[in-house]
Amino acid sequence: MSDTAVIEIRNLHKAYGALEVLKGVDIRAKRGDVVSLIGSSGSGKSTLLRCCNLLEDSQQGDMLFKGEPVTWKGRDHGRRPSDPKQVLRIRTNLSMVFQQFNLWAHMTILQNVMEAPVTVLRRDPAEVEQAARAYLDKVGIGDKCDVYPAQLSGGQQQRAAIARALCMEPEALLFDEPTSALDPELEQEVVKVIKDLAAEGRTMLIVTHDMKLAHDVSDHVVFLHQGLIEEQGAPDDLFGAPKSERLRGFLSATH
Ligand code: ADP
Ligand code: MG
Image (cartoon, rainbow, N blue to C red; front, side, top):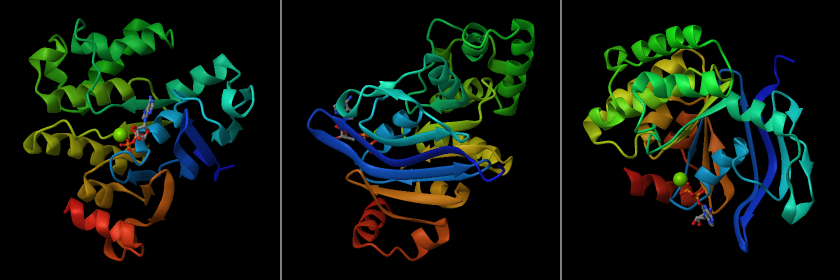
């Protein structure tokens, strides 16, 4: 069982009405794997992450969380997950970090980090507070517990969002362009946190436009093009010797 993937997706198809966004995608992340998803805007990266987290329905394909298949009801165009407890278990175990941080503006940073573990997971508030303070320390903003998001820089807000994701004690972290909204100098403080998490052996799926980050932290890189995996491999191979013309074009445009 040690080879069981934390997240596995096979032949995933997802359309919005007539628009086919994912046309048969396979993704697999074992415990401790860092998998990066790269590709042009509109290639389906965010949709794929949202499907992992069951934030989107899909039309076809299998999804497994730690070997447990997602069960669906309805068929084809109408299918959706059939077991709300399974959805909750999977969603709380795959914590998302968004490009725009999505912190609650009316809550302090500490309250933001504590909210879901207390209200969704019903953990003991005193224990959650201790953990939340430790995670905020870990991402370097332990002194910001009592301020509101608007009082922080973008980089600090994103680090708070990462602490919030960690405080769920998830099996894996899903990042959707975590540094895209940040100025270059603030980007680096978030990159450092992500690198530290990778070095700790966290399981992560990272959608990023930052090819250096993808190269440096990933075990595996997936290049999506128009809803299909065009090329994938180890970062040195993918970035050092890209085979597909489209990937070569994409990489030369992003450098
Ligand atoms: P990426 O993250 O790679 O930029 P997305 O997954 O966000 O790409 O989007 C893929 C395609 O799906 C785009 O054409 C986008 O316009 C479309 N799309 C995304 N979300 C929706 C939605 N909720 N309804 C309709 N179309 C959508
Ligand atoms: Mg996106």
